Length: 126
Image (cartoon, rainbow, N blue to C red; front, side):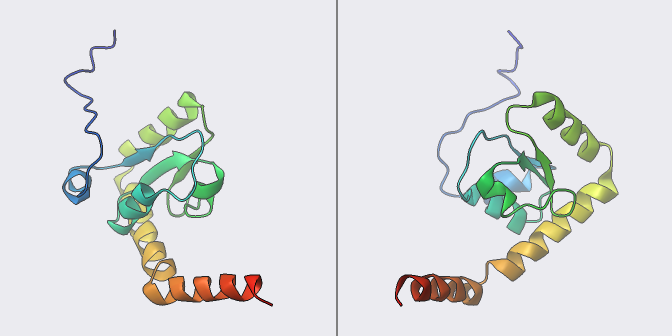
């Protein structure tokens, strides 16, 4: 028993995550597998420094050391090291958050998404 009941809260599905994100210093997503996690995109868009697992979908979004930190899935030691690295280095933490926010603003605009859909449709239809 780690006695975490007063420190860890499982809230279930939340329709509006912004208030929860505003209370965070670091966002952590330790997944064993992921597609494109909306929650990571939302955290990055709000400028949160992110730590996530180095699985396929996440590696397409988060660039380790530039827009966040990556940990091998199932490696609590590396995850812990990454959390400590951000806790102990405010300038680095802030830089990751700013760069993450910039990447989301550039890569996930409506125009960019429309271009991606158009390219995908052109590949499907000769």
